[in-house]
Length: 84
Image (cartoon, rainbow, N blue to C red; front, side, top):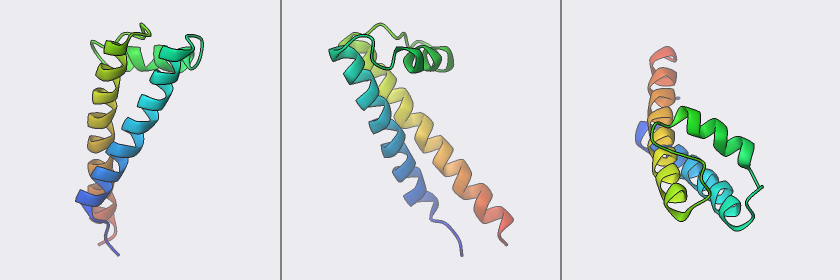
C-alpha cells in the first residue's frame, strides 16, 4: 500500500501549523505558556523570535506550515520508495 504524498503533505502541514499556532497564541495570551518550546523553535526557524507578539505568532505559524509540508512530503516519498 502506498501513501498519497499530496494528502500527507497537506495533513502534516495543517497538523504542525495548527499545533504551533495554538501554543504560540496561548503564549501571546498567557506569556509563560509554552515558552521553552517556543525558544527551541526559535533556534530551529531562522528569523523567528519567541517574543510573544502577534507578529511572532504569524511568522512561527508560517514556518511550521512549511516545515510540516516538507516533512510530510519527505516521509511519504521515503515510505513509498521503501515499500516497493
